[in-house]
Structure formats: C-alpha cells, structure tokens
Length: 75
Image (cartoon, rainbow, N blue to C red; front, top):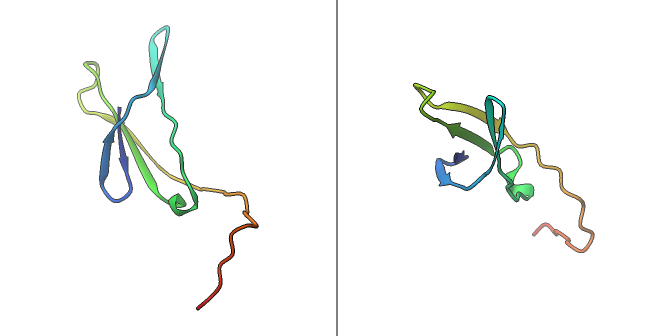
C-alpha cells in the first residue's frame, strides 16, 4: 500500500490485509498530533484487476486532549 501525505511525502507502508469472499481490504494505523490537523492523506492501491490505481484522499480532523502541563506565553 502507498500512503501519500500532505507535502508530497510518499511512504510505502505495511498494512493489515483482510480477505473476505470476493473482496480485500487493508488497514493502516498512523500516529498523529495536533500539528497534523487538516493534513491531507491519499491512499492508493492497485492489483491485476485494476487498469488504473484506485485512490481515496482524506483530510484529517485531529482532536487532542488539553494538556494542562504545557503553557504558551506570548513574547
């Protein structure tokens, strides 16, 4: 599976593949933080049954728990 991340970073990553009757799916897990909010990810897959690769693009909506131990002070 190829995962294309915002900023044109292209990663080949391993996925958990599941086969059911006549379909195949792959699942990936990524670790994100607040700076990944609104990052766009594109997943691309192909095999001998597809003439052109299939793809899906998602925009992340990251929600992070507030950490009271971190303080930001304006300069």
